[in-house]
Length: 191
Image 1 (spheres, helix red, strand yellow):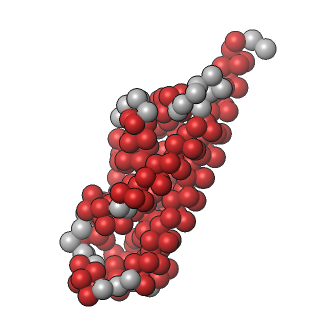
Image 2 (tube, one colour):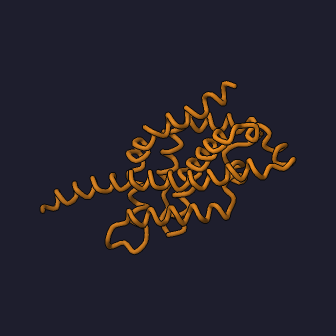
Image 3 (cartoon, one colour):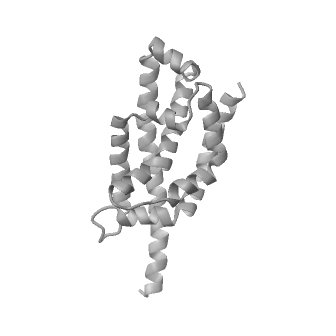
């Protein structure tokens, strides 16, 4: 096989693996946030109800969906960045591109959170506490590890891949994410 063919196959494989990783991570975060959403509904206290009056008034299903959006946003804005940084790789493109490509959807999510006087960063503190972040980061590390080049003993090659291919990865992901965000947020914002 020529070097050119190897390079082409490698690029194709990297994007395919990225799609697999993104799907796997979305599923893992969704499961974690489903648990958080259920616990939020079960563990209502008068303080939580006061603090999160609007979000607490949503149905269980709506709470789970909003939790998924918060988790997905955390993972893409901070999760990959933090996991890669902890492993010695700075990735600045990925979260910037996510913010740019899903800007309207993130604005809608902020509008929804503002009904409880929250923004994304304060929502992360409430819905993605440190102990959950550690679990999310472990899951992200494991997914990035699967994507790593065979000669990479860590996740350096994976972090570089998602940073260098950020636009392509996020645009592919956005094809499904944007409608998901909008299908959840638009009806809640129009209430």
